[in-house]
Image (cartoon, rainbow, N blue to C red):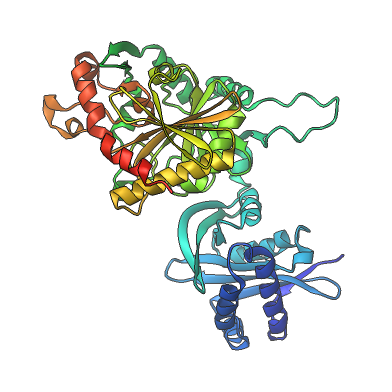
Length: 505
Ligand SMILES: [Zn+2]
C-alpha cells in the first residue's frame, strides 16, 4: 500500500470530519461519553470552522492518502504567544492505525517545522490515551506539564510535551534495559528472564563503574554514622548522612518547585545516568544520594504531579515485581517528596528499617475493620500513628487504600491528597501497606534559627524508623524525648485517625 503525504486542501473537509469523529470514537469513547464528544465536535468541527482553519496562516495540515482512501491527517498550529509549533491533531482512521502512517505524518510536521526554523515540536495527549503516549515517547517526545482538557461536560487530564528536532530520541540513549514483567518468553530454551531485583542490582553495579557521582554517593555512604536510640515502646536508628543535606533542606514550596529545573525529567538527568524502562511508563534509576546499600528511585516518564490514588496499581505492581525482600516507598507531595511535581516512588531491600521488626507478629496490631475484604490494623505504642492494610487481591488493596484516603479527606475537610507516607511490600502472597498519616511535614525545630535549628525533614524513611540527620550536631544531640516529640508533632492525632477509620464506606 503506497502512502502519499500532501498538504490539505478545501476538498478534504468531509474526510477530515469523518476521520476525526471515527478516531475519537475508537480512542476516546472508553473514557469520554459519546454525548460529550458529540457536543465538542458539533462546535469545533463544523464545516465552517474547518474551512476557516484551512485559511488561517497560523495553521497547516497534512493528509495521508492511500490509493483510494484518505487514511489520516495532522494539523499544525503555530502559537504566536508561546512562539511554539504544536501538532494540534493527528488522527488516523482505526483501520490504518499501527502501520507507520502516524510516523509519516509526524515526519511531514517535522519537515514543516524545519522550514520555519523551529527546533521543537509540541503536542498535547490525553493521559488515558496510553497507546498514543507510548508512541510519542518512543519517537522522542517528553511530556513536561499536565493540564485539564474539557470536552462537553467531561474534563480529562492532558499531558503537554515536546520533541527536540534533529536529535535522536533521548530515551534510547539512556535505557540500560527494559522490564515488562518477564512473562513474555515462553520458548522452553529461552534464557531465563531476570527478575526485577536482579536487573536493578546489575544496573547499580554497572552504574557504580560508569557514573562517578553515583560512585561517590556510595563512597560517602560508607562513612555515615548510625546509632540506635531506644524510645518509649519503639526504637529509631539515627543516621548521620551529610550527603542528604540537599534533600533535607530542599525547598518544596510550590513557587520554588515551579521555578527549579525538575531533576527527574528525562532531559535533565545527569550525564552518565542510565535507567531501566519499567512497564513502558516508568524509569528505575539509581539514587545518587543513597540512604541504603542499594537505593532506587522509580520515576514516571512524564512530568506529572505526585499522587497516590491514581497510581496505586503501579505501586502494588512494583511490590509484586520486586518480590519479598524489598520495600517500595511513597512520599506524599507535601510530606517528604523532594520532587512533588514529578511522580515517583523509591525501592530498597527490606530489613533495614526498625519498624519492620516492631510490627512483625501481631502483638501490637489491633484489627479495626475490613474494607473490601482487606484487613485494616492500627498499630499501638510506636510513638506515631501507623495503619496497616493487608490483603491478597491487588484491586481490593487499592480500593481499601483509596477508601481510607477518602475518609481522611472527609474528616480533615480537605480536597487534596491527605498527607501520608506509605511503605509497602509483598510477602507470602499478600500485599502489606504501612501507612503513616501526617499532620505536618517538618517539625517547628526545622525552622528555628541558629543553634536551635534541628535539620530533620521526615519522609517515609524517617517514619519507618531511620531518622536522617545530615548535620552532625543534630545526630549527637537528638535523644529519646526529642525523637518522641518529633514523631508526635508530625503525625496525625490518633483520635482523627480513628474517626477516619470509622468514616470509611
Ligand atoms: Zn519532571
